[in-house]
Amino acid sequence: MMHPEEKIMRIFAPIRIAAWLVSALLLALSVPASRADDTLTIDTPSGPVAFTIELALTPEEQARGLMFRNSLAERHGMLFDFGAEREVNMWMKNTLIPLDMLFIRADGTIHHIAAQTEPLSLDVIGSGGDVKAVLEIAGGAAKTLGIAQGAKVHHAIFSGSQ
Image (cartoon, rainbow, N blue to C red; front, side, top):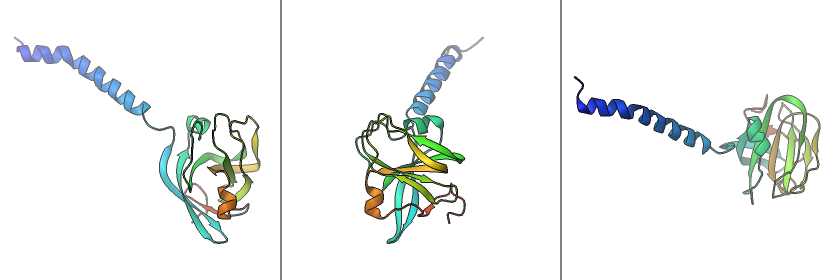
């Protein structure tokens, strides 16, 4: 004969498992749309400039990007890694702040900079050639910090970026 406590445990075991699954799902949904607290540096005539970045690696993270944000801290940004080099098109839909978009080749060289992009615009912003990644930073920061086309970006996703 089964002890009363064992009966209760057997009855509630499926409920405990369901509660654990719901908790795991809620935790997974609370993870931010991108991965934060990585760093990269960009060579400038005045020396290297460091940025704290969020990584946008998945299609979902890349689709959301920096949408709906009211601000972007100084020397912070989002790095979109597209894996292999290809022509890239971006836009500012639902993006509330102006951004500088740095289009970066696989070797870490900045190929093109789209400066002070217009918030909420549906205009396509193209890379103008094959790139591996895009770094979005606060609008005007590239000019202020001396970041120019041809500068080298150092991060683990770029070959020879050491």
